[in-house]
Image 1 (spheres, rainbow, N blue to C red):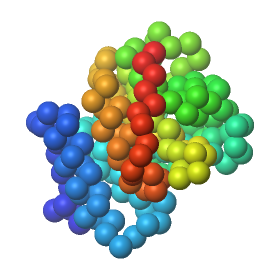
Image 2: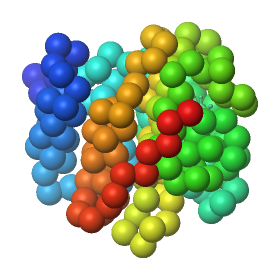
Image 3: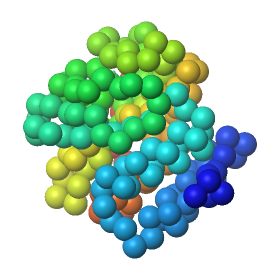
Image 4: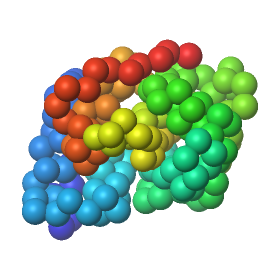
Length: 173
Ligand code: SME
């Protein structure tokens, strides 16, 4: 599968996310397994954009606890309480959270000391229930903006079964 890896760093963000979207659909054709999808999307985003860490925290106790899922990068913390850190905040509010500077986000959980900015996108299922959050970390300050939020929100809808009719849920910190 090495030949299918993509590098989207040279593209404008809208095109970059469209390219990831195309490859995700291509690689996953005929497979709707959520673990395979989370792993494949993590891989495409990590290598495609060259991010520091990309992965999922899954809801294991609704309203209380997230546990790490498929990811790429250095060791992620295993569990995060809903309401704690950036992931827990996105989970509690079911809104995308953009953190331009992690040092300025009270309660930020530092899994990798190199992380400087972060975006966390909720994965909401067709019934409106939170299934997981997608966490993307960068070594660069202010790496993420509105275009990343829109691009990532679209990507997670592919496997959340909510591709149509979901409005943006962006909150900027
Ligand atoms: N920084 C996250 C924790 C997860 S790690 O970065 C992989 C947070 O504050 O929720």
